[in-house]
Length: 190
Image 1: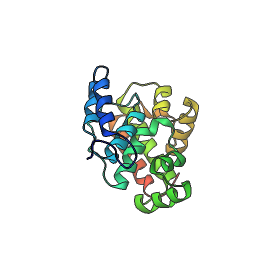
Image 2 (image 1 turned 90 degrees about the horizontal axis):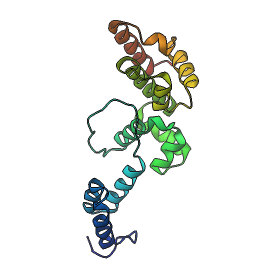
Image 3 (image 1 turned 90 degrees about the vertical axis):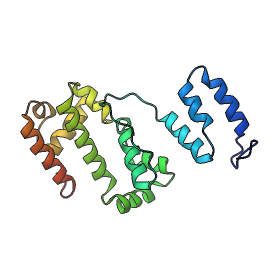
């Protein structure tokens, strides 16, 4: 790439200077900044910077860089579930109107946004309830609920049982309940 500027008017020489300045305080971000070769690389870096957050979710292996639209959507929702995911947030991320995003989501993901989001929240909730000792308030926050009451109401309405009653079940009962939740997510809505 040219050393002076790109189509967006960003000087790549200035990016290199900035990465040198950044190296002292945050070497991993400076390394990423130095590797920028395209506007897409810069956009990805900026998105990653704005998506920095600390959640209570268990450690997971880094996922490969998403390339397809369904993969990008799935990754974005999963990584931002704790922020109170809405169709408007997804539409802003994709750069589309909410109506277009809703139609596009249904077409490429095979189900409406609301059903997908509900299923993701239920799956994450059941995982957190069965594999961690986090409080209901912490779990509610990790799933993007404004408070514990909202989370408990959502969970009970979706599963027929309160989150606290879900926790002490045996492992066999948990597997059966999770399988039921997954079956429901592909068909009927409770």
